[in-house]
Length: 122
Ligand SMILES: [Zn+2]
Image 1 (cartoon, rainbow, N blue to C red):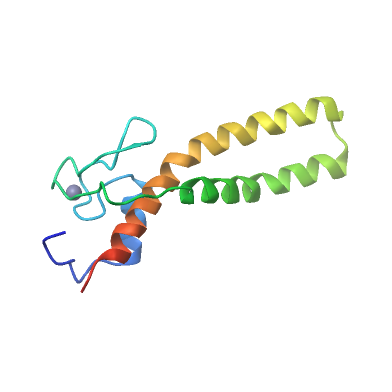
Image 2 (image 1 turned 180 degrees about the vertical axis):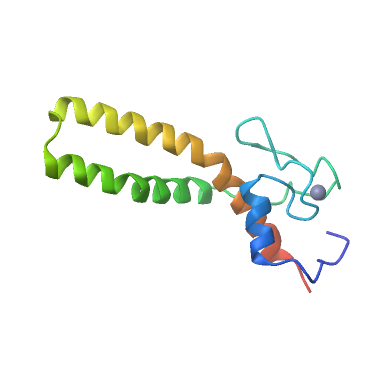
């Protein structure tokens, strides 16, 4: 955090870097190693990432997005009674689990980027 923030940096840039799970400062280095483990510093520019703690934010965002993505399908399945409930429930739970696990790293990248960006001083 030694260098000043680029004045051209926008929320769009920050969110894009977060979704890509790239360093919010340089956009090149990774912020996650493996599935969810956070790097202590950027692998490219050595920006300190250790003090950024996303905590439960990514999980909250993942649950919110998963619920909103699956709600129309759940509503459709219930209203049209197309499958018996004993088949619907495991399928919905499996899809919800896979969706949540797929979204979680992206949400963590977004939270790390947002936290980094909001801490920057002009
Ligand atoms: Zn970097």
